[in-house]
Image (tube, rainbow, N blue to C red):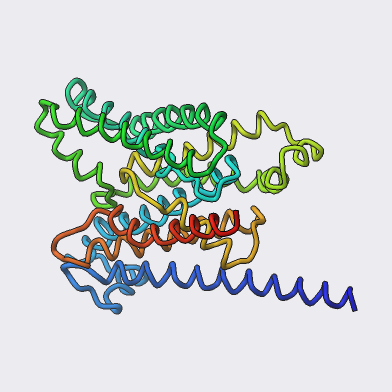
Length: 346
């Protein structure tokens, strides 16, 4: 009877995983089609199929799809997945369910350094490459993470760590706004839109650079599934399983910073995705196994950001909302529920 129950539970669990992944993949495809179809210029499904699959290359619709909408859709999916995965890795690192790149001030630190670097580049060099932006964002992410690590050694309370992260975010945002406000270069006005978060203006060059970096980081995170699973059960257990805790923690922070840096460099700071999506994925799958949660979090983040981008573009068209406005509205209730749930159970 026990063996039968175990087998039944195992089959049921695998069925749940398959169902959730299938739903997310279908949602991803649906979001892609709706995003391609929706906009100031309506493109029918027949025209979309002809352009994407039948080799149709004529007309304005072709240019709209391949030069404007498709790069934006791909970047929303890639960066959304990266942001969700960054939040998951930070939650594992801090053993804290509300840790995330935006809440802990990591995105704001990346934004500050990117803004400073962009101002310098526009004033001295005249342009800034994608890799330079990612490097600047990575440096800013590490700067904020370092400060959070120092604070976390003294503040073990989840609420106190949250407040410290928010204060870091405010400080970095204040510095960014101050520098942008008093910048002399007229092109700096473009930073205001970027600093609010947006997937607009993407190109396939951005997709290639960002896609390669995030794919490598995703592969590294996925290969670390076993040590991450051991670390979730406690540092003592992880050590008994042969995990080098010091190296493991460094790699975890580096990977999380790479994900966060790519998002901030290309789309600006985006709020709540890194907290809300991993939690929703865990609740839906009924598991915290990294082997399952890592790809599921990436898919969930992709769908979440594609949906948010669609709402940002179309809710008050032709006016476009910042992406963080939409992700805050969708993600903040999840964080509030988590805080209430934690307070009730503590």
